[in-house]
Length: 170
Image (cartoon, rainbow, N blue to C red; front, side):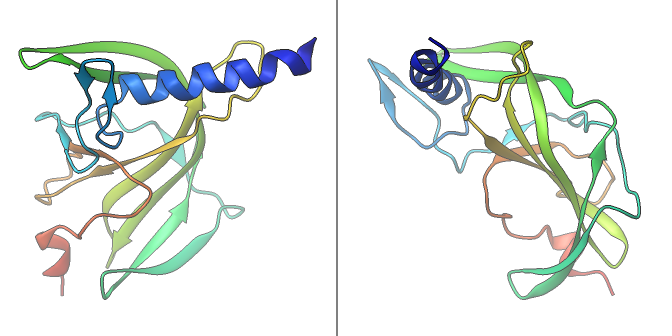
């Protein structure tokens, strides 16, 4: 019985994740069109970044974004289940906002010369019965102006172009 439920649950979760997240690739669902993945979701006062810690068991990687070397550290979230805001474009005049529980699967920060400019968080839908639902998505929270506020949220696997203030660090 359990195996018969896994495939339908996977399909439902995948469709659900695609409908409610505006950063999914542009596609049609009935007569509704989703916002393309290049659109940034901006919160002027900044997005709440889940609390996390860095311990000696976490890993640090030197990577390049464009041609600039940056450091990425894996982080351990203090609470792996969070409230995640979803935005759904209902019509040309209406955007619907809802909140759903999501589990943090992986979290890392990105820095250059000691200044953190982005966080990458991979989420999956939360299930109280602790079964995994294979509908992962990754979100980047970026500080584009260097003020320490991560006001830009982009759903993307790749790190977008570096903010100008990061490029100008000496």
